[in-house]
Amino acid sequence: MSLLRTEASEHVTTLVISNAQQRNALSNTLLHEFIDAVISAEARAARALIIRAEAGVTTWSAGHDISELPSDGTDPLTWSNPLEELFRTIRRMPFPVIAAVEGGVWGGACDLVLTCDLVVAMRTASFAITPAKLGVPYNTAGVAHFVSGLPLNVAKEMFFTANPLTAEQMAAFGVVNRLVSSETELTSEATVLANRIASLAPLSIGAIKAEMTALTDASPLTSSTFEHLTSRRNAAWRSDDYLEGIAAFKERRTPTFIGK
Image (tube, rainbow, N blue to C red; front, top):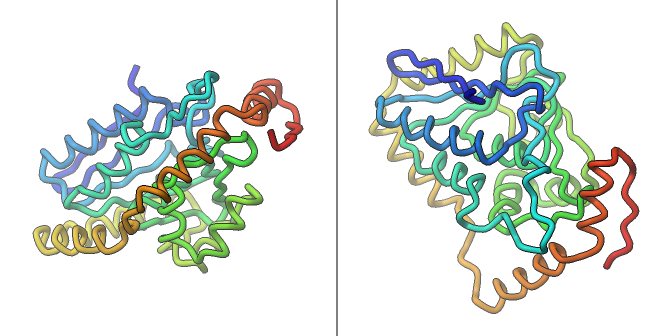
């Protein structure tokens, strides 16, 4: 059974995450479906793409599927990870991608929203990046998405506290382009934006998007800096705190972290 539904018109494609029972968690299966669907939209010469959840959900996406995280100390958030592959696929597409957000957006799903080019959100939506609640050392490329998309002090607060920000706060910080008050408005506003984009010159938009993507990519890391970051992240993956965070999540209790 597909976890992602595709709705395509002449120039606009909508991808609907359809796994509410699992809170639309970004499992490897869903991520591979996502990548294929985005590439298929390019093959259909789409001029705009909308990513959304089914109407009425309380969670747009709970982020990375926790059950698929490793327990052997290995790092799953490498360059070849399907979540990172999805982000790169979205960034290299010649058409703008619009996130239409209803409900809570957690963890890697928050990263996904930031990777999209435009965001329409209901005022009741909320956004949180939560690796510190699980003992997960978020990857450098993902942190760069937040640092480039938000004021640095806001990105730090999101990572260091794991507290959610409201859609209105995210709009004030420039992440959300349009705030709406109902699901009907969400659909309408996202569709209006997509159709407006689709009505303009796709080669021009594609070139400008490519320029913006290049200009906002993180600066190259030196080998010594990369090795330092990698060693710190590996230490976190192999820590007792990581195992405690995952165990507490599964047992639905508050984790006790000891810093080791």
